[in-house]
Length: 342
Image (spheres, rainbow, N blue to C red):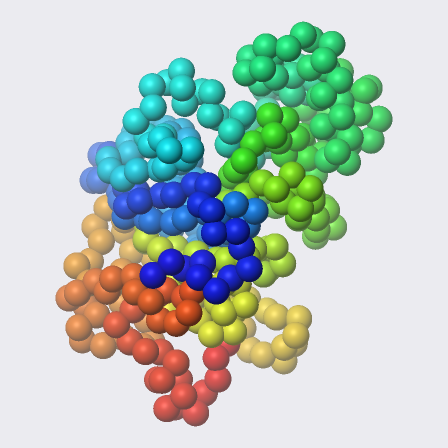
């Protein structure tokens, strides 16, 4: 089943991930960071990927552009973009896709920006490399891009080095760099991490403008459920390297169908329910180098059944435009106990 069916999105896929597998080969064993992930990103939509730290969100995002560092390696799957599998492209062709066709906003703007080059030089570089335009035109477009992302006095700031910018401004610069080539897809890896609430809201407003004004599709990785609630059309929940649930944002928050999603929603406060008790998720995530044979969430799950220990459930349709990886109909269990959805 197409998990976008029934949603108000363009049904033209711009990026399709099929059975993606990324492993890290360490001294303690093979860490299956991405373990058979399949996703489709549609034109003009924002798809959020959420989950705890270490669940494989960032590794999935980096794998799309084959940016996995050693000792990691993509061991299987396909990433289809514009009729080609990005994982099979020669380095020169892949470099042409990076930045120009698919933009990337990295998690830490300070470590992602070159401290020895001015902001202007870093913004102009992809234009000079990919479009082979003159420096004057590249500078004009770079200044305009800084203005578009809300950097004041943009012509003057072109001469500054990254350390002269605040955290929020550096993040805006990273977004400007990801957009300078007018890409069809923007990959955003934790774009609001370590930003205060005010700057976070400004960055999210900027992403909304990107989608509305440029028509770009956005894949946003975050651990913050509040971020996806405010910006995403659909949400994919990851646990132990796998997608365990995917649905429209409204459905996921109002009718979660996987125990991990239920636990995630109960672990964060909600402004619309100030008196609701916040409950942390019991236990710890499994060792990705020694995953159990059944459901990876078994030891932490309050809905578990004996079969869950031995057999890992497939990702199946549980409603219109809604898929989950669980043997148990948790809505029926909650209803039988007289409880309410989170």
